[in-house]
Image 1 (cartoon, rainbow, N blue to C red):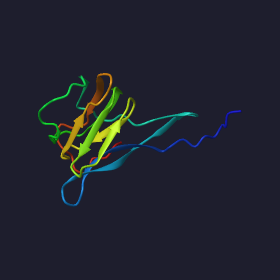
Image 2 (image 1 turned 90 degrees about the vertical axis):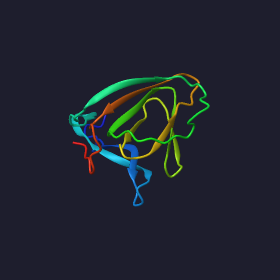
Image 3 (image 1 turned 30 degrees about the horizontal axis):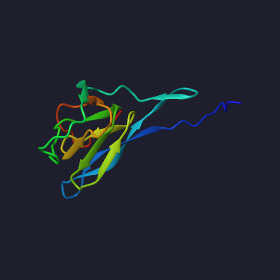
Length: 139
């Protein structure tokens, strides 16, 4: 029998980067507030988005820039749709993401992404801002 009064999560916690006290990229989590839309469903408020895109990367070894770190200069979210994505940040920690996993990208944080997968890696990117916005907060 279904429970009529489910306590749904009030927010969705998404991993991402931030700058530490020394200005280096480090991992953190961001909370996206959720609104209950039904007995068993919740959505976030509409978020402002600047642009979106699909990316497809073949898993081919590259003899150059194997550990190149870069900034995006935009804040956004990247979701893995197929394959796997490994991201290393400036403090040296690496995380591996699988299909369905999302990651908040802080535009000022140095990171390196590698597509290590038996199948091509497909990503969906949503750019939330066209510049880095200190103290950015989800609606």
